[in-house]
Length: 358
Image (cartoon, rainbow, N blue to C red; front, side, top):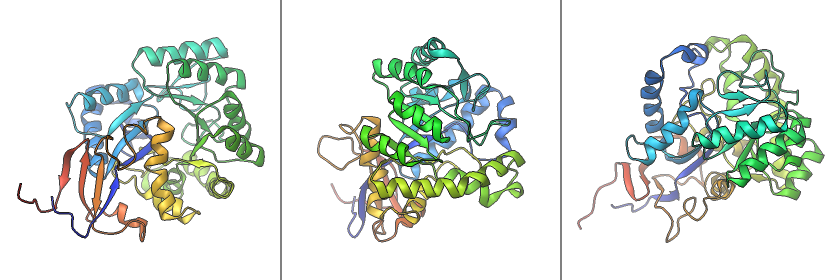
């Protein structure tokens, strides 16, 4: 394959997706009532679109009926094309907490959380998600409110770590973030209201921030006209400014950053994941640092740096070949015409480059 004049980077890694969701806000409620086979057929298309955009590895942090676990298995067994998947099954939330009844199972008390985490592991989960605060997408839940206590979170983390699973904490509220950090989670998802103490805890413990900047940005910038429910627009607008300020503060302090989009939230579509890198650069990262957060550092968070995330002998050949330099313009990664080839584990996913003679 003649890649003369092109730029080769590792396949991108998105550490926070909901790959079984389309990003169409009009499906937020209606999609729950669709038969599981229909959702699976649609999700296969979302997986293909994500892979063809150069996202070769993802961590899926919640799907109704644990469809993400089954999708990860289907991809691993070659039944459908898609990114390498680490799937959390259902997240674990408190009774009435964020995500309940859809992408999370409810549990209360340390023993209840232990049992819920064990149930996800039994079902085949290769990642674990705990809800440490409220969120934007669940009606009647305030993102500024903590949910699980520190003891409940610690019980869930202990069970996950015993099974060598990486733990993500949905954590937007300040107290929820700090409860999750003291409990020993591996990554804070969103991190909307970080204070100095939370940032210092992240630095001390080496915890990663997976900010998912795209999610509230798209909610605010598309709004009711796109069919996003009023309560989601209201909360998304409320959090955006503080979210971006917290990200800037974390970057300035040197917190570990890994890329995640929350793909599947409103107007946050499969295959458009690289827009997150553009937002990270707009908010303080250099293009090179954003690229590291989306490859090598993301692999470090997921504990797969011996497999993916870098261009090195012995690692899986996950590669993206571009005709524009992403270090000069990170927007190149969002331009499908600039992506000339995507390779996953040595197999060509798609390519418009000329083939050379053997």
